[in-house]
Image (cartoon, rainbow over all chains, first blue to last red; front, side, top):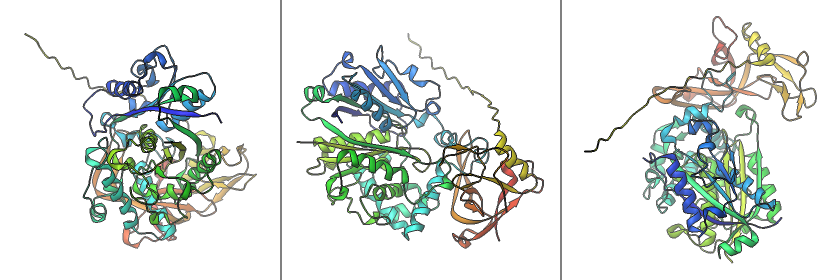
Length: 380
Length: 152
């Protein structure tokens, strides 16, 4: 596979209620990425955006984001998934040989819409939706219980991940203020209110306002644009059935299939030793453990034993992950950005030493029905 | 002199969709009126689906409408459960005072689990419990005909 490089990025600070307009936010993210990379609007030949019509409150919502997203008189497409999925299509366009610079952006502002209601629209209107029993809140409860029950784990094991990520988020100036909890303890997490048993409120990544952007270029251009390109050396993507009652919620079959695909491309045979850091899009703390196991970073059921602190053997979510703020349609792309920062040595106080090869994941759907994972390398 | 005019427009977009449940769900809901569960079976892989469906996703084939129907009992096994104060509608989510306990029950004879309220004390719930559907008194052929599950 030809080399596709990440040559720039930008992410806005996450807020519960950003108090500025969606279009300004998108412009800030995209223009910031272009400016930071020393590029110009005329360099952009293709744009892939990731939003959701229900979150935007308008249909064909990208017809309104043409100007702010850098897509004016350029070719532009929208993906109704996460920004991490949009990056896949940007990557494919670069690999086609037809484009020199792809702008990828994604995000939304849940302060403007009823988030859980819009998630309810994922459900079947002729079966589950009228009752509303299956929604993103209860789905997370079922998923956590399935995982704990299968492997005989305790709520403490899950709470520890929430503590780690919230403390990490406290080192990340762009994370949600409410999620920056430097002194949080497992007791605090376990005693927070029930979200959907056994998930408690502090185990959940709060949906928040945010937009992020990434720039991709083919090898030759990438090397001209930046002296710190990060190469996408592998990608995998897969999805399971819609019916959560027909899935194995204690594991992630789609993440496992995605990992196989990505590792195959990147020639990774021993992920635990070949990967320096992982940024995984976890909507709730327990998902980080499920994903880590499905990615081969631990045996099934042994996720809690990974030494995943910033100074640990295999740091996971040094940025705080989506527990540090979960802007719908941006959270997965932000994991890519955080992995890129680590490889470029730009992660400030949560920098992992010597990070050269990272994995970053994004997801969409109830209980992560669909997963995508990238292998990113650089820092020579 | 300058005037700051702020205009707030409150609008509700009402877009009623009329979804047809389809011939397969139609049969499913018809049997609700008899307080029964029907499912259909993929002739290739043998999976039995609740609710029944036209396409087997695993085999990517169409299940013929007039064949492969299976009458199931309205009993099952509890495979998962949760409880929450949140009530989510297509307008908003709110936290009510009380908890709703929900169970995921795998209907006997199929590999499909469905989600409905559990009429069991939370502390008495055990995964693996045998459950039975509690039907409303006069089912009309809709999802709410199933009130919940009770312990067998």
